[in-house]
Structures are given as structure tokens and as C-alpha cells.
Length: 133
Ligand SMILES: [Zn+2]
Image 1: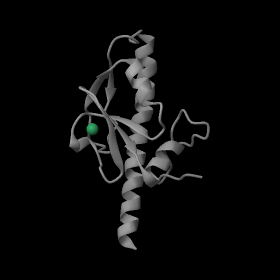
Image 2: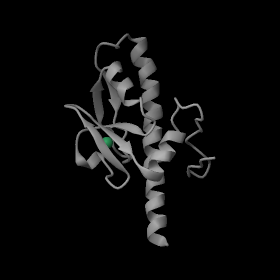
Image 3: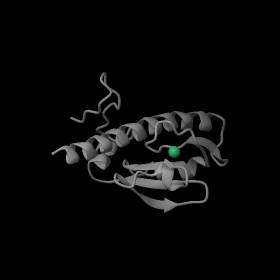
Image 4: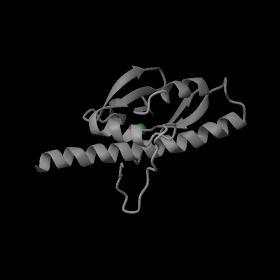
């Protein structure tokens, strides 16, 4: 069933891309904390599935932490072009950023690759595909 396969690989691509950006932001967080930006706005990258997107978002560490409460939640710039509506939905709209939540298969993959989860698995693999065990 090609249509199903296509949807599945799209879900995997979205989950992989967004999980990679999440990893980057987790590194940014440590950097921000090192400079004691906890109460000020730090600079985060958009975690949308478009790998060419380089939008920067201003959030305090507290606001960022609120996004990370869910393993399938991601931080994106405000705008429909940062949301893949077939794999995720917008759950919160703020002035400078939106929070999306992945659903279905993509949501499961996002949970499994969450660095804060107990059963975290690495995002990357040699052939670029995402394997969840
Ligand atoms: Zn984006």
C-alpha cells in the first residue's frame, strides 16, 4: 500500500528532523544557563520538520522547559509553514512561538527519541533512517 508507506516515511522524516533540532536546543539550554539567562530570553532554533528552516525564537528557559514537558511536543516559529498538519497539531500559540504536538506514529517516535525519557534511543543511525527498538 504505497499511500500508507508514503505517509509513514513522512512521519518518520518529521520525527527525525524535529528530534535533531530538539537535541540542538538541549545544548543551547546548557549554554544559556551558563550565561545565567534563566530569567532573560534565550535564543532557540525552530524545531519544525523543514530541515532548511533556521528561524530563531526568543524564549526564557522557563518557557522552554514548559515545551519539554511532553516528549512529543516541539517548539516552532509562529506560522503554518512551520507545521506539518498531517503529523502534528498546534497545541499552544504564543506571541513569538508555537508549540506543536506530534500524533500517531510520529508522536511515538518523538517520545522514543526524547533525551529526557528513561528509554531514550539515539536519533541518528548510519543510513539516516530512524530505528525504534
Ligand atoms: Zn521552522
